[in-house]
Length: 275
Image (tube, rainbow, N blue to C red; front, side):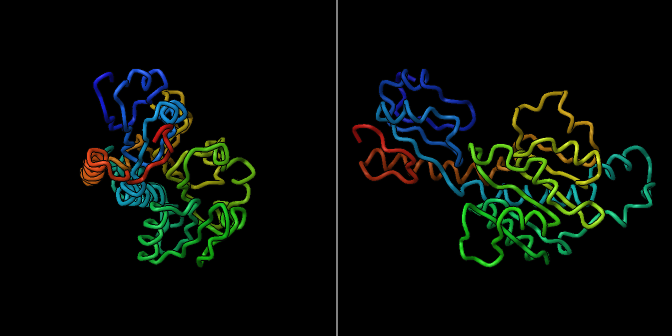
Protein backbone atom coordinates (compact mmCIF):
# COMPACT_ATOMS: atom_id res chain seq x y z
CA UNK A 1 0.00 0.00 0.00
CA UNK A 2 2.72 2.61 0.77
CA UNK A 3 4.08 2.32 -2.79
CA UNK A 4 0.82 1.97 -4.72
CA UNK A 5 -0.61 4.81 -6.79
CA UNK A 6 -3.55 2.75 -8.08
CA UNK A 7 -5.44 -0.14 -6.48
CA UNK A 8 -7.53 -2.45 -8.66
CA UNK A 9 -10.21 -3.60 -6.26
CA UNK A 10 -12.35 -6.72 -6.67
CA UNK A 11 -13.68 -8.32 -3.48
CA UNK A 12 -11.53 -7.80 -0.39
CA UNK A 13 -12.94 -4.78 1.51
CA UNK A 14 -10.76 -1.67 1.61
CA UNK A 15 -11.09 -0.12 5.05
CA UNK A 16 -10.12 3.34 6.15
CA UNK A 17 -7.07 1.82 7.82
CA UNK A 18 -6.05 0.27 4.51
CA UNK A 19 -6.44 3.54 2.65
CA UNK A 20 -4.51 5.50 5.28
CA UNK A 21 -1.46 3.37 4.45
CA UNK A 22 -1.57 4.57 0.84
CA UNK A 23 0.62 7.64 1.06
CA UNK A 24 0.93 7.78 -2.75
CA UNK A 25 -2.51 6.40 -3.56
CA UNK A 26 -4.39 8.38 -6.24
CA UNK A 27 -7.05 5.97 -7.51
CA UNK A 28 -9.05 2.98 -6.33
CA UNK A 29 -10.64 1.34 -9.35
CA UNK A 30 -13.47 -1.04 -8.55
CA UNK A 31 -13.73 -4.05 -10.86
CA UNK A 32 -17.51 -3.96 -10.97
CA UNK A 33 -20.21 -1.46 -10.07
CA UNK A 34 -20.77 -1.65 -6.31
CA UNK A 35 -18.45 0.42 -4.12
CA UNK A 36 -19.95 -0.62 -0.76
CA UNK A 37 -16.72 -2.52 0.06
CA UNK A 38 -14.65 0.68 -0.09
CA UNK A 39 -14.46 3.25 2.74
CA UNK A 40 -15.65 6.08 0.53
CA UNK A 41 -15.45 8.79 3.20
CA UNK A 42 -11.79 8.08 3.92
CA UNK A 43 -10.92 7.90 0.24
CA UNK A 44 -12.63 11.21 -0.47
CA UNK A 45 -11.08 12.97 2.52
CA UNK A 46 -7.61 11.75 1.54
CA UNK A 47 -7.99 12.94 -2.05
CA UNK A 48 -8.19 9.42 -3.48
CA UNK A 49 -10.37 9.06 -6.54
CA UNK A 50 -12.75 6.08 -6.69
CA UNK A 51 -14.01 4.82 -10.04
CA UNK A 52 -16.14 1.84 -10.97
CA UNK A 53 -17.18 -0.08 -14.08
CA UNK A 54 -20.95 0.09 -14.56
CA UNK A 55 -22.07 -2.33 -17.21
CA UNK A 56 -18.84 -4.33 -17.40
CA UNK A 57 -20.44 -7.39 -15.82
CA UNK A 58 -23.84 -6.93 -17.47
CA UNK A 59 -23.49 -9.46 -20.33
CA UNK A 60 -22.22 -12.22 -18.02
CA UNK A 61 -24.66 -11.56 -15.16
CA UNK A 62 -27.61 -11.35 -17.55
CA UNK A 63 -26.79 -14.75 -19.02
CA UNK A 64 -26.23 -16.13 -15.51
CA UNK A 65 -29.63 -14.80 -14.46
CA UNK A 66 -31.37 -16.59 -17.32
CA UNK A 67 -29.37 -19.71 -16.48
CA UNK A 68 -30.77 -19.64 -12.93
CA UNK A 69 -34.30 -19.03 -14.23
CA UNK A 70 -34.11 -22.01 -16.56
CA UNK A 71 -32.48 -24.29 -14.00
CA UNK A 72 -35.16 -23.47 -11.42
CA UNK A 73 -38.10 -23.54 -13.83
CA UNK A 74 -37.06 -26.87 -15.34
CA UNK A 75 -36.04 -28.44 -11.98
CA UNK A 76 -32.54 -29.09 -13.31
CA UNK A 77 -30.83 -30.05 -10.01
CA UNK A 78 -33.52 -32.63 -9.18
CA UNK A 79 -33.41 -34.18 -12.65
CA UNK A 80 -29.62 -34.22 -12.72
CA UNK A 81 -29.58 -36.02 -9.35
CA UNK A 82 -32.14 -38.56 -10.59
CA UNK A 83 -29.95 -39.47 -13.58
CA UNK A 84 -26.86 -39.81 -11.38
CA UNK A 85 -28.79 -42.11 -9.07
CA UNK A 86 -29.76 -44.40 -11.94
CA UNK A 87 -33.33 -43.22 -12.32
CA UNK A 88 -34.44 -42.54 -15.86
CA UNK A 89 -37.91 -41.24 -16.67
CA UNK A 90 -38.90 -38.89 -13.81
CA UNK A 91 -40.62 -40.67 -10.99
CA UNK A 92 -42.61 -37.53 -10.19
CA UNK A 93 -45.75 -37.64 -12.39
CA UNK A 94 -46.32 -33.93 -11.75
CA UNK A 95 -43.24 -32.89 -13.70
CA UNK A 96 -45.12 -31.93 -16.85
CA UNK A 97 -47.67 -30.03 -14.80
CA UNK A 98 -45.16 -27.96 -12.83
CA UNK A 99 -42.24 -27.03 -15.09
CA UNK A 100 -42.63 -24.00 -17.33
CA UNK A 101 -41.19 -22.39 -20.44
CA UNK A 102 -39.83 -18.90 -19.95
CA UNK A 103 -41.65 -18.01 -23.15
CA UNK A 104 -44.97 -18.75 -21.50
CA UNK A 105 -44.30 -16.54 -18.50
CA UNK A 106 -44.48 -12.92 -17.47
CA UNK A 107 -41.05 -11.88 -16.18
CA UNK A 108 -40.94 -9.03 -13.67
CA UNK A 109 -37.62 -7.24 -13.25
CA UNK A 110 -36.98 -5.30 -10.04
CA UNK A 111 -34.43 -2.66 -10.93
CA UNK A 112 -33.87 -1.75 -14.56
CA UNK A 113 -30.22 -0.98 -15.08
CA UNK A 114 -27.69 -2.46 -17.50
CA UNK A 115 -28.15 -6.06 -16.35
CA UNK A 116 -31.94 -6.05 -16.21
CA UNK A 117 -32.14 -4.47 -19.66
CA UNK A 118 -30.10 -7.35 -21.09
CA UNK A 119 -32.21 -9.92 -19.25
CA UNK A 120 -35.32 -8.27 -20.70
CA UNK A 121 -33.96 -8.57 -24.23
CA UNK A 122 -33.06 -12.25 -23.78
CA UNK A 123 -36.34 -13.39 -22.24
CA UNK A 124 -38.39 -11.29 -24.67
CA UNK A 125 -36.61 -13.06 -27.53
CA UNK A 126 -37.71 -16.34 -25.90
CA UNK A 127 -41.34 -15.16 -26.01
CA UNK A 128 -41.83 -13.85 -22.45
CA UNK A 129 -43.82 -10.78 -21.53
CA UNK A 130 -41.62 -8.38 -19.55
CA UNK A 131 -42.52 -5.95 -16.79
CA UNK A 132 -40.12 -3.82 -14.78
CA UNK A 133 -40.05 -1.47 -11.85
CA UNK A 134 -37.61 1.14 -10.61
CA UNK A 135 -37.65 4.02 -8.13
CA UNK A 136 -40.08 5.97 -10.32
CA UNK A 137 -42.02 5.58 -13.55
CA UNK A 138 -39.41 5.81 -16.30
CA UNK A 139 -41.99 6.17 -19.07
CA UNK A 140 -40.97 2.96 -20.81
CA UNK A 141 -43.56 0.30 -21.69
CA UNK A 142 -43.98 -2.38 -19.05
CA UNK A 143 -43.24 -0.22 -15.99
CA UNK A 144 -45.31 -1.14 -12.94
CA UNK A 145 -45.23 -0.17 -9.26
CA UNK A 146 -43.68 -2.98 -7.24
CA UNK A 147 -46.96 -4.35 -5.77
CA UNK A 148 -48.52 -4.58 -9.24
CA UNK A 149 -45.42 -6.16 -10.73
CA UNK A 150 -45.36 -8.84 -8.03
CA UNK A 151 -49.02 -9.66 -8.55
CA UNK A 152 -48.70 -9.95 -12.34
CA UNK A 153 -45.39 -11.81 -12.71
CA UNK A 154 -44.69 -15.53 -12.99
CA UNK A 155 -40.94 -14.94 -12.59
CA UNK A 156 -39.48 -12.17 -10.44
CA UNK A 157 -35.81 -11.29 -10.85
CA UNK A 158 -34.01 -8.82 -8.61
CA UNK A 159 -31.29 -6.51 -9.97
CA UNK A 160 -30.76 -3.85 -7.32
CA UNK A 161 -27.76 -2.79 -5.24
CA UNK A 162 -27.77 -3.36 -1.49
CA UNK A 163 -28.91 -0.11 0.15
CA UNK A 164 -31.08 0.79 3.12
CA UNK A 165 -34.02 0.96 0.70
CA UNK A 166 -33.45 -2.46 -0.89
CA UNK A 167 -32.47 -4.41 2.25
CA UNK A 168 -35.13 -7.11 2.74
CA UNK A 169 -37.09 -5.57 -0.12
CA UNK A 170 -38.95 -8.83 -0.77
CA UNK A 171 -40.40 -9.53 2.66
CA UNK A 172 -43.38 -11.62 3.78
CA UNK A 173 -45.83 -8.95 2.62
CA UNK A 174 -44.24 -8.82 -0.84
CA UNK A 175 -44.26 -12.61 -1.15
CA UNK A 176 -47.96 -12.62 -0.23
CA UNK A 177 -48.69 -10.37 -3.22
CA UNK A 178 -47.31 -12.93 -5.66
CA UNK A 179 -49.50 -15.49 -7.38
CA UNK A 180 -49.83 -18.76 -5.48
CA UNK A 181 -47.94 -21.67 -7.00
CA UNK A 182 -51.11 -23.22 -8.38
CA UNK A 183 -51.72 -20.15 -10.53
CA UNK A 184 -48.23 -19.96 -11.97
CA UNK A 185 -44.57 -20.76 -11.51
CA UNK A 186 -42.50 -18.29 -9.51
CA UNK A 187 -38.75 -17.96 -9.55
CA UNK A 188 -37.02 -15.33 -7.49
CA UNK A 189 -33.44 -14.50 -8.43
CA UNK A 190 -30.68 -13.53 -8.86
CA UNK A 191 -30.25 -11.47 -5.71
CA UNK A 192 -30.95 -12.49 -2.12
CA UNK A 193 -32.70 -9.28 -1.01
CA UNK A 194 -35.43 -11.25 0.68
CA UNK A 195 -36.59 -12.22 4.16
CA UNK A 196 -37.78 -15.72 5.06
CA UNK A 197 -37.80 -17.09 1.51
CA UNK A 198 -37.46 -20.63 2.87
CA UNK A 199 -40.95 -20.52 4.38
CA UNK A 200 -42.55 -19.67 1.03
CA UNK A 201 -40.48 -22.31 -0.76
CA UNK A 202 -41.17 -25.05 1.79
CA UNK A 203 -44.86 -24.22 1.99
CA UNK A 204 -45.32 -24.29 -1.77
CA UNK A 205 -46.25 -20.64 -2.28
CA UNK A 206 -43.06 -20.21 -4.29
CA UNK A 207 -42.29 -23.01 -6.71
CA UNK A 208 -38.55 -22.38 -6.97
CA UNK A 209 -35.74 -19.92 -6.45
CA UNK A 210 -32.42 -19.27 -8.16
CA UNK A 211 -29.87 -17.27 -6.18
CA UNK A 212 -26.31 -16.09 -6.74
CA UNK A 213 -25.86 -13.42 -4.04
CA UNK A 214 -26.46 -13.89 -0.31
CA UNK A 215 -26.65 -11.75 2.80
CA UNK A 216 -23.80 -13.76 4.37
CA UNK A 217 -20.98 -15.04 2.12
CA UNK A 218 -19.70 -17.70 2.00
CA UNK A 219 -23.05 -19.33 2.68
CA UNK A 220 -23.00 -20.98 6.11
CA UNK A 221 -23.74 -24.72 6.40
CA UNK A 222 -26.85 -24.03 8.50
CA UNK A 223 -28.53 -21.87 5.83
CA UNK A 224 -32.01 -23.42 5.42
CA UNK A 225 -31.93 -22.86 1.66
CA UNK A 226 -29.35 -25.66 1.40
CA UNK A 227 -31.96 -28.22 2.47
CA UNK A 228 -34.46 -27.39 -0.28
CA UNK A 229 -34.47 -29.24 -3.61
CA UNK A 230 -36.43 -26.46 -5.35
CA UNK A 231 -33.59 -23.96 -4.93
CA UNK A 232 -30.68 -23.48 -7.35
CA UNK A 233 -27.60 -21.81 -5.85
CA UNK A 234 -24.36 -20.43 -7.26
CA UNK A 235 -21.62 -18.76 -5.13
CA UNK A 236 -21.73 -15.14 -6.38
CA UNK A 237 -20.06 -16.03 -9.68
CA UNK A 238 -22.50 -15.07 -12.44
CA UNK A 239 -20.21 -12.11 -13.22
CA UNK A 240 -17.02 -14.19 -13.20
CA UNK A 241 -16.15 -15.10 -16.79
CA UNK A 242 -13.11 -14.65 -18.99
CA UNK A 243 -15.10 -12.12 -21.00
CA UNK A 244 -15.88 -9.99 -17.93
CA UNK A 245 -12.22 -10.04 -16.92
CA UNK A 246 -11.20 -8.80 -20.38
CA UNK A 247 -13.67 -5.93 -20.08
CA UNK A 248 -12.40 -5.13 -16.57
CA UNK A 249 -8.76 -5.02 -17.63
CA UNK A 250 -9.49 -2.91 -20.70
CA UNK A 251 -11.32 -0.27 -18.66
CA UNK A 252 -8.79 -0.35 -15.82
CA UNK A 253 -5.79 0.15 -18.10
CA UNK A 254 -7.55 2.99 -19.93
CA UNK A 255 -8.27 4.81 -16.66
CA UNK A 256 -4.64 4.39 -15.60
CA UNK A 257 -3.62 6.06 -18.87
CA UNK A 258 -6.08 8.89 -18.14
CA UNK A 259 -4.59 9.31 -14.66
CA UNK A 260 -1.05 9.34 -16.06
CA UNK A 261 -1.94 11.89 -18.73
CA UNK A 262 -3.95 14.19 -16.49
CA UNK A 263 -7.23 13.53 -18.31
CA UNK A 264 -10.63 13.20 -16.57
CA UNK A 265 -11.25 9.73 -15.19
CA UNK A 266 -14.08 7.61 -16.53
CA UNK A 267 -16.89 6.59 -14.14
CA UNK A 268 -15.64 8.59 -11.15
CA UNK A 269 -17.99 8.03 -8.20
CA UNK A 270 -16.64 10.58 -5.70
CA UNK A 271 -15.21 14.09 -5.63
CA UNK A 272 -11.89 13.71 -3.81
CA UNK A 273 -10.80 16.54 -1.54
CA UNK A 274 -8.25 18.72 -3.28
CA UNK A 275 -9.03 17.37 -6.77
